[in-house]
Length: 119
Image (cartoon, rainbow, N blue to C red):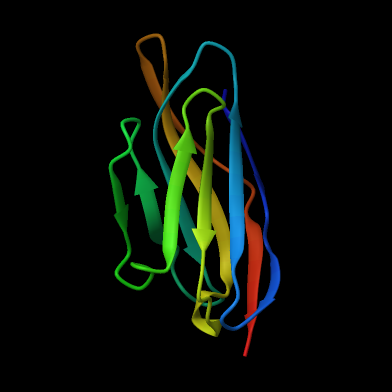
């Protein structure tokens, strides 16, 4: 089973920046696409950004040009650099990945990290 541990959330003023990190651990695994989701109060969880094992990325329209996702395949980590933050970015951010162990595929979620942007 893969465990995802997130870090880097917090409180920031509008216009500021935060960097989220997520580390995947588990034996005999191959991490595939890594993603960041977020869920604001009263709203559905939404995909923020994704990065494949070879580095292809995609972003939600609302964060394009402000957020950058990156990963380290050796360390099995994924990061989300968030710039020009606004109150609309306030949410719990979740790391997600799909992975394989042998011929079995599965997915895992992190516990979430709170990002609060004050106006």
